[in-house]
Image (cartoon, helix red, strand yellow):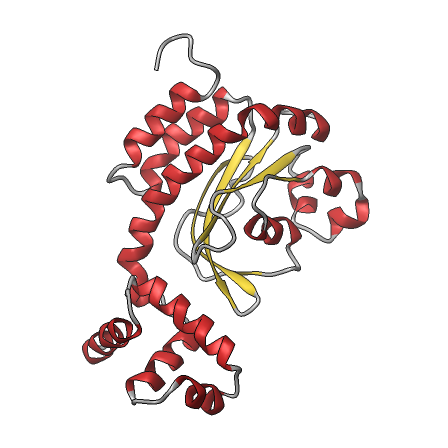
Length: 248
């Protein structure tokens, strides 16, 4: 990048370069530089996986005035009760937080109320992957100090492509870590499905045994395969059995 590069692009280049082989925590410094270059107040990047009508957070990194929780790899579930994150994982386009800042009822029904109490006045969520992906990711950003929600919406038009590219770089680094932890991160439901399949049961039999629909069982199997990084059901079962024998 040259010295005449638009705001954020030089910092994006540094972020993308570091993403190759880095982990999420190492991305904090260049990401913070990018956020500052764009005149934003904070960021929160999350990777999530669809699960039974919700999204399970697999990895998160946050900074600035959105640093409400520690970085790490957790199993928190996000559902419709948190509409901002919920919509950011379901949408294919940026989600403005302006309606939540301008409507007290909406604010109180979302995490925006907590952010407003900390002085955040504007924000948006940038979806990183399309809705048909097994993994979803979102980069949430807050406006500059005292920035009006509508002002951030206008600025977002020009710099959201930079943020999406940054999110893709973060996703690359984050998924490498998620994959390394995948075998240990199966949910109880996913474990139950793999356990049943390892006994030779068919999908419809597993569904009947667990009292769930075949569609739910297939979704849980797909999620388990993605977590483990298995290309096939057989590979997922074999890897799960190997872990079980090792007591992990």
